[in-house]
Structure formats: C-alpha cells, structure tokens
Image (cartoon, rainbow over all chains, first blue to last red; front, top):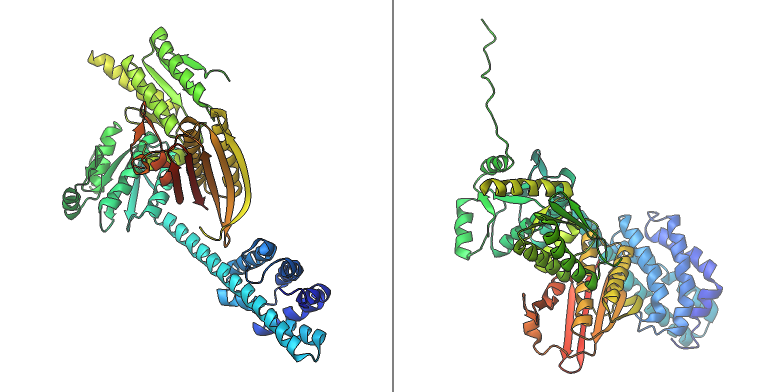
Amino acid sequence: MDAISKLPLILERDGAQLLKTWMAEVSAATRGRLNDDALTEPARELLNALPLALQKGDLEEIQGPHWERVREVLTELSRTQTQQGLTATEVATLVFSIKRPLFEALEQEIGKDAAALAKEIWNATLLVDRLGLFTTEVALKAREEVISRQQTEMLELSTPVVKLWEGILALPLIGTLDSERTQVVMESLLQEIVRSGAAIAIIDITGVPTVDTLVAQHLLKTVAAARLMGAECIISGIRPQIASTIVHLGVNLGDVATKATLADAFAVALRRSDLAVVRSAPARNEQG
Amino acid sequence: MDRIPILKMGPFLLVTIQVDMHDQLAMTLQEDLAEKIVSSHARAVLIDISALDMVDSFMGRMLGTIASTSRILDAETVVVGMRPAVAITLVELGISLPGVRTALNVEKGMDLLRASVNGAERAQ
Amino acid sequence: MLNSVVVKGETLAVRSSEDVVKVRQQVRAWSVQEGMTLTDQTKIVTAASELARNTVVHGGGGTARLEVLSHNGRRGVRLTFEDQGPGIPDLQLAMRDGYSTGAGLGLGLSGAKRLCHEFDIQSKVGEGTRVIATRWK
C-alpha cells in the first residue's frame, strides 16, 4: 500500500466512530436480523488489526504473514457466525458493509481533491473486497465442517451395535461401506467390545447393496481390528448374488466365518460360547 | 527402568508393558522372557499392552517374535488389552500379528489360556 | 497443501531410540492440543514413530521438524524427517507393501503413508532422505 494512503490513519484515528457507523450499516443491510452485540467485539478487533497490516503488508498478498492477525479475526468471526446458522453470503455482507462508512470517512478526510479521493476509494474497495472474499471462503469452509459433522453424527446413528446376548454383539450394516464409514464402524464396534467384554461380533451385511473388492477389504479390516481385541467376527446376511460376486472377484475372506442369515450366525455364536437355547415345558391350556 | 519385570502367575508369565518402550528395552525383554519361560517351565506368556497408546511396526514385530520364540519353547502367547485406537491403526498399518492370540484383558486372557492348556493336557 | 500457514514449529534431533520416544510424545501432545480424535492422534503418532525410527536406523540419525499448519481454518500436523544417510536406491520398491531390507526389518514406509493424508518422500543415494507427512484434523 502507498505510504501516503490515508486509510491506516483514518482506521486508527476514527476507529470508534467507524465501528459505530459500520454496525449501524450492518443492521440496516440485514434488516435488523444481525443486531448482535457479539459482532461488535470482532469488528473492533478487525479495525484494530488493519492499520498495521496495511502499513507493513501488501494488499495483493492477503495470505502473507503481515495479514495473519486480520485473517485470524475474520476466521473467528466467520466461524462463530456460521455456527449460528448464517450463510456465507450473510457473513460476507458483514464485511462488505464497512464500505460506505469507510468511503464517507475518506470523503471527509480528503475533501475536494477528486483524484486523490478516487485513488483512496479504489484502495478501500480493493481492501474490503479482498477481506470479504477471504471471509466468504472461510465461511464456506466452516459450513462444510458443520455439514461434515452432521454427516458423521448420522453415520454413528446409523451403525448401532446391539447386544444379542451376553458376550455376543450384532452390527447390522445398512447402506454402502466406504472408508469413512468403516472408520466409524470400527470405532463403534471396538468401543462396544471394550464396554461389554464381548468375544463374538456378528456383522450383518443384509443391508449392504453391493460388495465389491473395496467393501470386502473394509469388512476384513473391521474383522482384523476386532480380532486384535480378542473378539471373533461372523459375517452374516450374504445373499446368493453377493456370494457369486465374491467368488467372481476372487475376494479372499480368509478364515472369517460366513453365514447366510443372522439367525444362523447367532446359532454359531451361541455354540462357540458354550450356550444353548432349550425349549421350556409346553404351555398348559388354562381352561378346564 | 532397566528391564521390564516378568511376573510368574502359576504356569503363566505376565508381562505388563508400560508406555514408550525404547528399542533396547524391547530386545532385553525378548531375551529375559525366553530365559524365564525355560527356567520356570511356563506354559504361556500374557503380554498386557493396555497401557500402550501406540504400537508401531517395531513393537508389532517384537510381539510376533516373542510369540514365535515362545512357541518353540512350547509356550503360548496371548496379547491382552489392546486399545481400540491402537487396533484400528495397526490394521491400517497392515500388521495383523499372526500367531499371536489376543484377549480383551488379563482375566479373559487367563481364561483363554486355562481352557487351551487344559485342552492340550486332555489331548496328551 | 499450498498456502498453508505454519502456526508453530519445532525441530528435534533424531539420533537415538530415546529421541524416537521424544518425537512420539511431542506429536501426541500437539495432536491432542489440536483436538484430533483419539484414533487420528494414534495414527499420526504411529506414523511419526515409524519415520523417526527409520531416520535413526537407516538414515544414521537426522532431524524431525514438527509443525502445526492452518489452511483456511483447517488445522493439521506436518512432520518432516531428514537425514544425510545412504538414501533409498529404489523408492518404488521401498514403498511397496511388505518390502523389507536386511534382517527382516521393514521400512514401514507404505504403512506410514496409509496413516497420513499427505505423504511425500525424496531420497538420493549417497545424499540422504526426506519424508514429509501431514495429517489434517
């Protein structure tokens, strides 16, 4: 930035006034939706951080080290507001709203020198645009994180681990098994193994639409991880088509026991646990 | 700590591995174990790794070596107490610890050994 | 990743097995600070252990540079292991699963790679090796 630009001076000297008009502008632009007092602090911090950044740094290099403090403030602002549910555009509007107050301050400072004023307004525009774009990027990223976290929560909810009997767990998988889901599945299963002390886990894949080499790898990984914690796995719910596919693809399930139905797998699990289901005495007819 | 203590519990030996074992300690442990298996006529070795927050390929190989050596000396090896995060990471690393039996904790490990030792005795 | 900002960094000597332990502890501490899940922490710590060990055993000792990165708000831990050792003659071979040199001591490179989001290795025979591994939160 030119050494003779008035922007740093105005920001430093008139910071308090600028803050007020900026917040009023925000309120007007968002029709009162964002009257949040929580905005004032980050806004003030931004105004405080700008003069030094402008003097030391290059407006073209907003990712550079001199702009780090500014980026920090904008990132924090962006994330908090996104978590409150604002869209990227709304967050960016917060930043862009500083234009009018800035231009007015510049006009007051520079007065009638049209050429100088035009130049300063250009500098101010560049600055606000860059800040606004950066804020948008961060807001978008933050929104992605929110969505991603919600997806993870949904994933966890959709992979419940059920206790079938003492020492026997069941893990009914619904939907595709990609590598991210596998991580969640492994973590849920292993945590439950620790919690319940189970030594057998039945992984039912009835609800898994396709089993290709990748899915098989993920399954085998899960089985291997459970085994490292002293639990054996049985894979159930293998439909005839899946069995053919597995053979065709040459997938090697190793020595993992496989059963067509969960019921069959449960029977095996009971046997391995030295348990048996016995028919109790037939119910007597109470009448007569 | 110079060497890792090996406890004798009846026919079994129990080794509890603390965090951050460095390489020399691991080598010493392997030697000590082999010696103790012979001198105490142990039938099995339980290695408790519940205190470990990480197992890398070196440690994995060490466990495998202990299992192989023990087997030659007619003793079983059971690794107990692996943490979930460690198990997941080991699987990702591609280490499956073949020839090493596992159990959730020391108690279950001993149950496992007692069952198999009894089975072996019955078979003889 | 380009345009990542280094938030903090530290260089550790990696010359002995005690140093390997120190690297593990530091990486664990930082990944805990960054709020990584337990599984993610364990992955990067294990990768660090593999790579640090390689530096000591195969590289004749070297350095480990630990850094916390920030990329548009997303944080990560980057590890750079450097040595002036003999170098790796055939990188492709070394990166293949199950590859090992000498007395059955695997280089663990392919495993470490699987544990990280970004992995780069450069090596020249007679000059040394540099491995850069990153795991994002």
